Length: 105
Image (cartoon, rainbow, N blue to C red; front, side, top):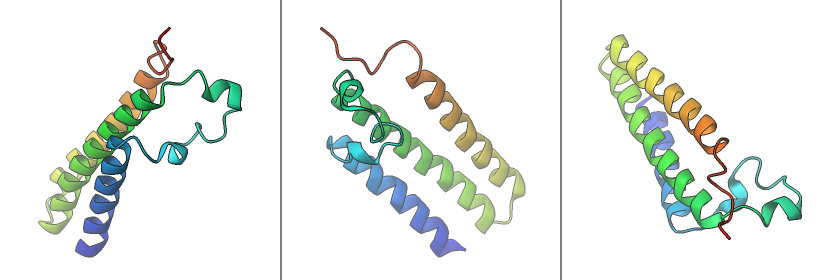
């Protein structure tokens, strides 16, 4: 189980680094299926910045979750799982409100 948890954490970290360098924009769900006219309205640099933050936070949440599993402390597992869900829900709501990803004119 430890190897799987380390693999998930490394995946989130690699994605975070990729997004922080402004690459991998086509891996963002929803962006790659947008029509070209909609893609032109999105600030790619800002989207990558937020996605990199999301990936790093998810890696941290998964670290808490996996420590709980390895130490057989279910309360720590549930704290990590709750944080994971909270971060995902927060980012979904935050990025879809307020036109934060629109290009500034």
